[in-house]
Amino acid sequence: MHPTRPPRLTPTAATWCGLAAATTAIGTGHLTAALLEPRSSPFLAIGNAAIDRTPEPVKHFAITTFGQADKTALLTGMALVLALLAATAGLLSRRDPRPGTALIAATGLLATAAVLSRPDIGTAGLLAPLVATLTGIAAFHALHRTAPTTTTPPPPPAHDPHDTLEEPLDPALPPETTHPDRRRFLTTSAAVATTAGLTATTGALLPGGPDTDTARRTIARALPPAGPPTPGTDFADAGTPTFITPNDDFYRVDTALSIPRIDLADWRLRVHGMVERELDLDFTALRRFPQTTRTITMTCVSNEIGGPYTSTAEFTGVPIRDVLLAAGIRPGAEQVFSTSTDGFTAGTPTDALLEPERGALLAYGMNGQPLPAAHGYPVRMVTPGLYGYVSATKWLTDLELTTFDKQAYWIQRGWGRLAPIKVQSRIDTPGGFGRIPAGRTTIAGTAWAQPIGIERVEVRADGGPWHTARLSTEVNPHTWRMWRCELDLPPGGHTIECRATDHHGTTQTPRRAPVLPDGATGWHSVFCTTR
Image (cartoon, rainbow, N blue to C red; front, side, top):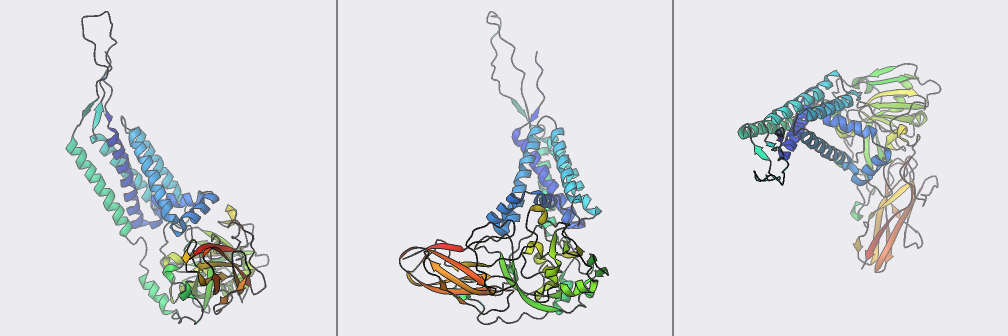
């Protein structure tokens, strides 16, 4: 006799056990984090750890492919991977819950390690992955105990053809499905699903940090109102951006999956390292330095030829130069190593920050408003003429004067150390593969060369002669300039190209180069059809 095989969960029930347990763990972990330490959410902590450890080519692919939705793409991909792991945990546990329990526990340990790796998360943050792991295991076991099972009957004994005393047994007997308590399983599933949904929703709706409204009003009272647009600074009627980029439209590229929420009353900026006097400034002390407002165009090194990652705003703050001179810079301090509250670091050449004409800022205002949280509230760096990855640390908390021996976040990943912005121009209209009327056609676009400024933009069609474009009014050499040019285009297909020249006489190179290691080069071109 062959004994009956032990009962197993049905594949559907096993998959549901894993998925429901994982969703419960994510929800309770996110809620616990929102109540205690917002950045300790296990899901977000694993995501941040993934960003830090992702190979550079993969990061560049994500930014190029998904643009400013790269973080959404990462979170969606993580959700799919976790769903696959959860389903696998359930299917591996059809006979015994221990394999799934081990996989949930291992994921919990991974989340704990991710939380511990974040410099901006305190000890209380460890409760979020702990709660997530325990509730995930509890939900998994509760569902596993009540889930439908199948029992496979023993295989039939071998049939002796010479034995005529019994009929041969059917070797294809179907498995018998049993339901220990369908109502109990449905009730448990409903309870687990409700818990997962409520905790995840509540965690998402909670503010997850201090109320910044009162503090923002305090900053707002110190800011000058945004001035009226300077006439002639853009050709928005011809298809260029407006000269000043609205805060909601200003590009955002950073490594933060969740936006830090910082209490202004607790905020401090430490200035230390190779200095004569270490400074520990709260916001009131920072405001004692002279305040200024400067119009600055910022550009991301990830901007491909013709890309959108450049924007302009009126930033209000105090000159970094004044703060550094107050600390007293010792000889040999090659860079200012800045650190964000979430652990991001950047290294800015000290000489660039000390240039009075460059005017780098510790900014707390943007277009007449306090810095938006997504753009670095309460204080960020803004340094004209350098790509943001070395000069524009958001959520700033620390400035260390040191040498280039200390490598910042992106330098460790193969990017260039100095990162001066290159002479660039792009065509904003017509768009690529656009269809436009034949004849006199307006070509319009944008050019930038901070901190030198744009002297000239030229445009040509189909490799023909260059035509000098009309430039918008220059506000200062730290900002972009819009341009427009009228060309006669006969019916057919046309390739339009542009190139810019800065005030030093440097003309944009035609040589194509990728963004790594210190910014893309090449002429922007679009193909359009006239009829």
